Structure formats: C-alpha cells, structure tokens
Amino acid sequence: MFPTIQIRVGSTNPVKVNAVKTAFSAAFVDHIIECIATDAPSDVAAQPMTEQETLQGAINRVAFCQQFAADYYVAIEGGVDHFSYGAATFAYVVIANANEQHVGRGANLPLPTAIYQSLLEGKELGPLMDELFNTHNIKQKGGAIGLLTNGLANREGNYHHALLLALAPFLHPALFAKQ
Image (cartoon, rainbow, N blue to C red; front, side, top):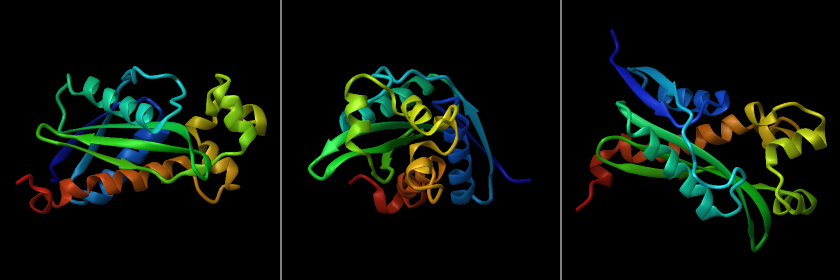
C-alpha cells in the first residue's frame, strides 16, 4: 500500500484541483495523492491586474488553507499585467508544507489590446472570454489559453507545468537547504 499525501488546494475550481493532483502524482509516483478543494479567499481583486497582486492572491489562499491539517498547501492565482512587450495573462502557484513555501509561475499568454482594455475597465478575463467566444464558464475548462491558442494549450497544462517547477525544492531539499 502506498502512503497518502494530503493536499489542501485553495480553490474549488476543478481545473486547478486537477492540475494539482496530476502534478503531485507525477512528482510523487509512489504515493496516493488526495486533494481537498477549499474555497479559500484571495483577498485581492477578482481580476488581479499586476504580478504582485496575483502572487499575493496565491499567498493569501495558501495562508487560509494552512489553518487545516494537510501535508501540502497549494494555491493558484491567475492574473494579468502590462509588460514592456504588451499585456499578458499568467498564473502564480504557491506550494507550502509545514516548513517551507515555494513559488512557481506559468507562462505568459499575450492578450489583445482590446481585451486588456476591457480588463482595465473592470471586467474579469473568464466572463469576458465567454462573451467574446460564445462559451460558458471557460475558466473551469480550457481558459483564455485554450481559446486564444485554438486548443493547442490550455489552462490546466499551464498550471501543471508551473506546479512541477515549484515542486523542485521539495524534490531536492538538500540542494535548496538554507545555509
């Protein structure tokens, strides 16, 4: 019988929860991965508009989850920002256990100027994409990534990759040990 790793995920979004489950399953192949979806507040805007606000949302969700017992605590926060090369959407992931916390980040998806302008006016990316592409609840499916890449990439895959990167210090603790 394999040991169980219990993960408190700071979201009830099935895309985020599944990304956590698949990333941890890939990283810890000799374990049973149990994810507990938790409606954790981000305490930032519904549509974070800067890198810092996006990261803070993920940190806040993990902190909320840490009031419950688990082996790991994970949060994923999607946001947008305007960089020197243009507007983009991305996600931060935060993974913590009882002793440490590490951050990962997903790839940037360039955003059309008109979409970014609508976000500046107070719209949220998921509902905006639903409106533009005549979809329903895309943020719990392929996301803007899926729509803008014609399905070549998707939200869950971007989260999965960011989670694997953030897991590196947990997989090689001796290399990342604080001195």
